[in-house]
Length: 167
Image (cartoon, rainbow, N blue to C red):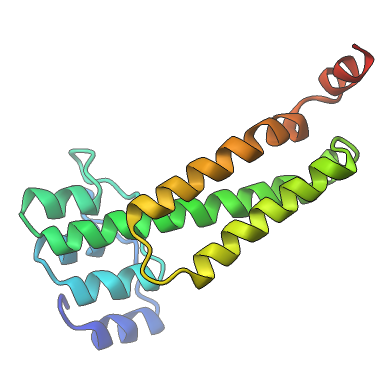
C-alpha cells in the first residue's frame, strides 16, 4: 500500500478508514511517513488523514518521520499541520462569530474588523505562492492577536458582557 497513491485512493473510495490505527496507535500516515513515501503522505493528507494522531509513544507522524530521518516527509507534515491550524482557526472564528449566542456582543466596527481579518487571512492562504510552515504560523499568530479580544467578548457569558457595558 505504501508508495502507491492510486491504490490508497481506491481503498478509501471503497470504504477503508484513512485514520485506522494499529494496536500500538500507528496510522497509515505514520507508516507512510516513517518509510519516507512522500507522495503517499501527501495523498493521505489531501484525503483527510489525521495529522494529530499519536502512536503509543505519543508521537505524531511528523515526529516519527524525523526519528527515522525522513526529513522531506517530516517537513511536509509540519507544513501541512501549520496550514491546517491556520485554516481551523479561521473556521472556528467564523463559527463563533455566526453563533446565535454571539449576536449583539460586538459593535459594528468590531464586526467589520473580525470579518475582514478572517477574509484577509483566507485570501492570503489562497493566493500566496509557496508559503512555508513558518509563514502559516506567523499568519495565525497575527490573526490570534487581532481576534483574541473579540473572541473573548463573543464567548463571554451574558452577565459578564452586561457588567462590562455598565462600567
